[in-house]
Image (cartoon, rainbow, N blue to C red; front, side):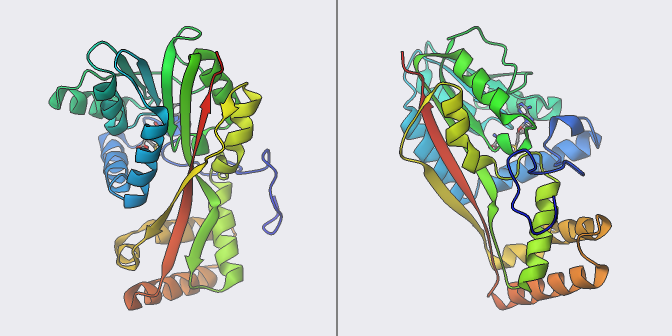
Length: 288
Ligand SMILES: C[S@@+](CC[C@H](N)C(=O)[O-])C[C@H]1O[C@@H](n2cnc3c(N)ncnc32)[C@H](O)[C@@H]1O
């Protein structure tokens, strides 16, 4: 992909240095890496935008007592525990989590809170459930890490029961606003980030992927913009790490990256910086 081209779905992301959440990087960095991922997920779910979109999806899914519910890529299991409570006392709530460290943390938190939720190993494209066994399925911020998201959509349709509901929530990194900065530098910085992701524009493809899998997609698409408070930019090393990676990959020169960072940090100090990425939620149903 050339820096200025508009990527097609198959060109999106080259996977050059994939995100820490991808399957292929599980096991790297040991316990310290797991602690980093847990801290990141805990911080993200404190964001009002994440909570709003989660609440919207939960209402649309309307889990009922006795139903079988699944959270794919459940992470530390916060939403899984919420689902477990909604389907109690006779329902079943299972989280699929391929990362053993996150799975262990999710299981520990479930035990600690007396939740009936359980976590299992698995893959979004290969779920350990029989055809039609699941009433409600959710999957949040996982599709951006999948090299073959359509395979996951087909798998969700396979395991859903007639009248089953699915909610897939994900970011679309094409919606990033990064202000201030020279537009050309900002664009090249963003494009370098896209190339490191398996599926950076995950959200925009969700309705069609779920339709292709044979599901009926609700017209109401949920959305919430994650806007980082300027002061949080000062404490976060993320922009620096991404700028360093862009230099290593040849997308920015060192001088350009330093200029980009200096502009961003000056604006963050002055309270005038604006950094956001939008998350979307798509709900679909299996017509019985
Ligand atoms: C950004 S985290 C989101 C976790 C959780 N859904 C949340 O919203 O807090 C991405 C999650 O996807 C999981 N994941 C990555 N590849 C996966 C795959 N192929 N199938 C299922 N889960 C996967 C990761 O282990 C991680 O838990």
